[in-house]
Amino acid sequence: MALNGFIDLRSDTLTIPTPAMREAMATAEVGDDVFGEDRTVNALQELAAEKLGHEAALLVSSGTMGNLTALLAHCGRGDAAIVGDGSHVYTNEAGGLAAIGGILPYVVPNQPDGSLRLEDIEAAIRPDNAHFAPARVIALENTHNRMSGAYLTPEYTRQVADLAHARGLKLHIDGARIFNAAVAQNVDVKALAQCADSVTFCLSKGLSGPVGSVLCGSKEFIRIAHKRRKALGGGMRQAGVIAAAGIVALEQMVERLRDDHANARILAEGIACVEGLHVNLAGVKTNMVYFDLDPALPFDAADLCKRAAAERVKMLPTGPRRIRAVTHCYVSRDEVVEAAQVIAHVTHDGRGRAADGKVHAY
Ligand code: TLP
View 1 (cartoon, rainbow, N blue to C red):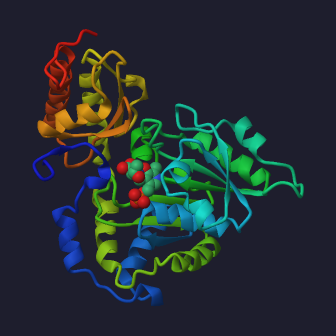
View 2 (view 1 turned 30 degrees about the horizontal axis):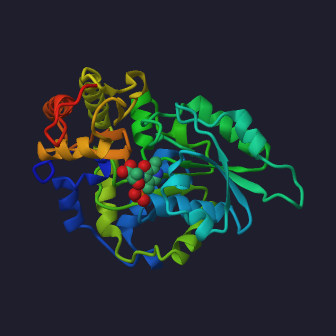
């Protein structure tokens, strides 16, 4: 199960195509997608639209391109988008919305459950006045990466959609991991996606596809998004090769996400037992575990990750004293148990002795 010999928990983006995907890719029927003639791309787009309860869909190269394409389709230059302060689109997409779209982010605090408070959204919608950039879209993220993979519920999503529509705005969902959100709540993904005006989801995260995301919306929205994607250089020609893997991802890899969630819990419970490491167990809802190093530990997150990597376990430092571990289909139950043991070992080793060999009390 290991990836290149490692228990690699840095991200679910590290997953590689499954044997079934490679087989589908090798035999995929392809054509020029810029001419709309790649049957495998068309089949993936139809399947994705149908699953999410939208009229149409568009294959894009990445989650980042999906979000940017959507925002460019919803907004013109000088318009605003309401985004969470911890959202991927605001914090981790190289400022594309501003740099490429000329879109002003109106930033609202993300709550620990990944939501934006309705009153905060309301307050961010400025009155129609020559001074203000008009907000055109609200962007939610489900699951929420920085908020420990927390999921948004169908009820909450509907409330935001209703608020957006009552105020003449659109709702976009960065659903990079929306299938994790659906599986974790035992709901049809439509219940989380259908009420939005646009939704992206990633094939290349927990679903294990090699490349690609899909943007869903109405036929008219996708017609405009298609032009924006072209402007971004996203016309991918014989993209059926990757779409073929995407179809396998949607057909075979969704239900098993439950295993990743169960493994994340086992990992979190193991980490919670390690003195000096703090994890909010109640916050572990899907496939992500974030944990913090006690200030008294005489090393930081990057050091701890280095020590763990030397013992075959890779994790991502996401702050000076914060670490993220993500489960996926290339990490088994036994391997998360092993990972928790390694984390305990490298933490305890450092507790008495720092890398310089000196004894530190904490
Ligand atoms: N997230 C990556 C990193 O960029 C942090 C990861 O390892 O988790 N939306 C969300 C919520 C995401 O987590 C990501 C990727 C994206 C969008 C962007 O997707 P890609 O990487 O395909 O552009």
